[in-house]
Each structure stands twice: as structure tokens, then as C-alpha cells.
Length: 207
Image (cartoon, rainbow, N blue to C red; front, side, top):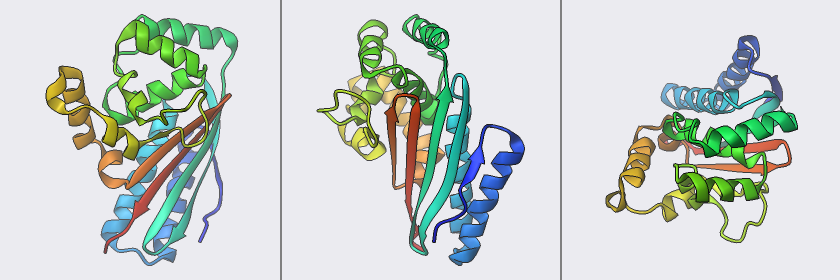
């Protein structure tokens, strides 16, 4: 089954339509109450992550799958001028974006920088030392530019240093434990190209 594709732009009425599609998927696939609740929570987390991006954005949301597994899609395009891009890079390298907390907030921060270019992510890593650098552990080692599926939660978990190796890595492990997205999703992939962001959340149901 594939749900309707819902246009979202951050407005509450569009968010509610997307959530309604998640509920519709649950009903159609006859998911348990528990799994239906989890799917709705994943939808809320996914939409919340893209909602905080700098600049205006438009996106398409839909779910596809079957009774035992599904995939949530969010394809977004941001409207960001060169001036806004420059301001974003300046703010990030000066540490003003360090307030981004939690998996969603930090991923959103990485997405914002990634929209600029891979080189700007490298610049951020070398100049600021903030947690956005850690999040590149989830990227494909050979990636020279951002591309679809260039960052995944599973790869990130595999490559993240152990908690005892530093306060920052310990904090990120703690965030993973507390994250609804990290705990409920089987995997999350983020791809970035030009001004487009592709986020896919994979979920398997056990009940």
C-alpha cells in the first residue's frame, strides 16, 4: 500500500493531514493499537525535524509498505538565498547553533549545513569541533558530495565512538537513548542534493 502524497509546509493543517494519512495506513494494514501509535509518533518526529529548518520549505510526505513493515518518506525542498546560506554558515562556525539538542535537532543542524555543500560540512568539522562533526560518522566514507542515503542512523551507530571516549560522544549516546526516532525506527536515511532533502524512515512491526 502507498498512501496519498501530502504536501506539507509547516502549517498545522498540513501536518494534521499527514498525520491522518499515517492513521489511515494503520487502519488499512490493521495494525495493533500499539503499532499505530508508534507509526504516528514516527510521523510526528519526522515532520518536526524538517519543520525547524532554516528558510522556507515545501515537502511531500507519504508512507508505503505492508502489515509487517513500512517506509515513511519526506522529500523536501528549501528556499534558501545565498545570503541566508552565508548567514547560516557564519552562525554555525561561530557556535551559535550549538543549542540544537537531541537527535532531531542535531540532524536538522547537519541537514542545514549539508544544504550548503559537503565542503562546508568539512569546514564546520575543522573549525568548530561541535557535534555536527560527530554526525558525519553516519555518512558513507567515500562520499565526496551529499547524495541520497549519504547518512544513515545504522551506519552512525556502528561508527560512533564508545561513550567513555569523551563527554561529547557520551552526550550523543545519551541522546540516542532518549530519542523517539532512534528508538522506534529501524533505520533512518538522509540524502541531500542541492536544495533538496530526502529523509526515509524504515519501520518493522513485530506484533
